[in-house]
Image (cartoon, rainbow, N blue to C red; front, side, top):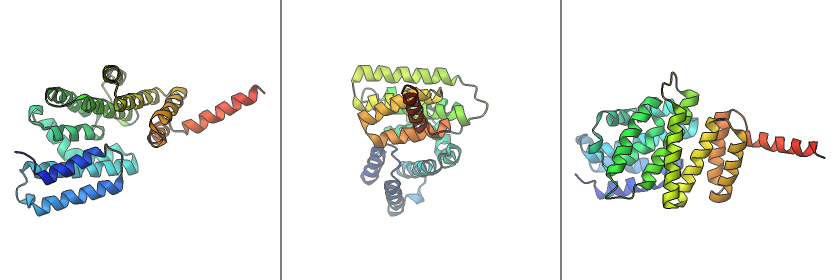
Length: 256
């Protein structure tokens, strides 16, 4: 069954936000989805695909809002849990394009890294299945970018991790680099650069984090750069950039 055009327009607008944590826009879209459910009386048939997708996106918006405000992925998971569990149990061949994009957007809110890896593996297979009918490079890159955030979070906050996080991170970096070399796309280059910064946060390499973030500022703007700098400070437990500047000033003073 096809989506109702009114819902499809709202969904398209939501995905164009690309996880930028615009809370005002999130609230607007959330209210429009609730109004759509009410106006179409979809609550009378909770098996309707339009109802399911609308409620899933509402839950993803709520998870995103919680994470933007608290950086607590475990709390965000509580909002995403119902639809993540459905994806775990369902056949990937039944996922439509919007469901796949929704899962990729929510991969950072999984209960643990094991669930993230299982869902990412299924999502990767489904992305490939769309290859003949859609451009999949951005979808693939978005999945790898979001997994770089999830793996980084797992290092610091997941308990009893059995997965080789270094190997998984290394694999996604290789995939992103191959996409960049193949397509020469600026969005792909941004995703690869952000993933590289997260790799150096993962390894606590302050000098590389600062250098790459400066490159991010120069090439893609300070707004994006500041988001990643905040992420670096959050995980590394210090103001990495201020500390680096202090070290540089101290170094200059020693040579006077």
